[in-house]
Length: 288
Picture 1 (cartoon, rainbow, N blue to C red):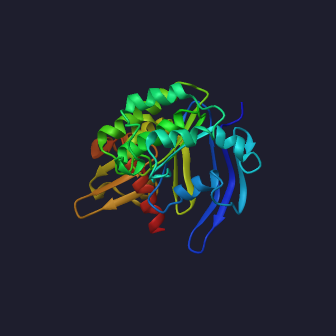
Picture 2: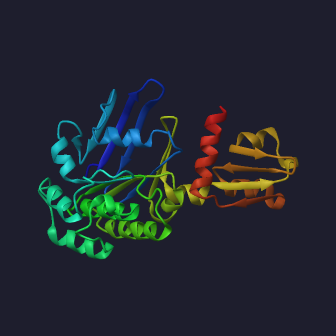
Picture 3: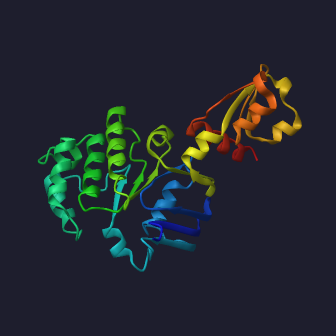
């Protein structure tokens, strides 16, 4: 079976920023976290996937189909949840549902009703009067009510309280039990991805730094702390990034077990978070 999303050598240039030869693959049945600092190229990549921007070069295939030539068919099978509201503010939830449902061949009224009740969304309230959390829940309800196979999310949890974020992650965990579906989740809140992502793709300055299984990152990488006396030039080269002060150092390595073998109890080696990994990689890129 072909990947649900495949990007090859994608490029797009602006006056002061460019995406450079982006490559990534997402298979059915998985959640991919797309991370990076603000301005790294996450939203630009998503706009190119959605054909809201025209690419300069490269190839984007969704469900094995060309994202431009087969755009209408593809978008009928995709659900979108964005940070910003894209619905008519003056319409009520019920009225907006009536408009949107006409656009999808696979619209499911029973699913819509189920999610409206689960999220306790008021059908007669205008979109403009919904809280940020309610707007996100409504966007997710729309996405899930036409049996979308691929869910594309651009900073959906930004600005939401922890309870609403937790609800969203729970829904995604349930959704991905259907191994025919997949989620592409762009965010700078990496703690959300610690809980649910299968794969992590890091982008910085318009370039993919890595795209790999989350468990490989968290089970192999290490956050190393110790006295500067144990640092020598050979060891320095093994660090992805280093922070030093007058008391000691902290740094990120790809193989924490190797560091333990080399230095024993002379250093402290901890399991990093995704945020640790992202910060050390992006700090290194900025210092090059």
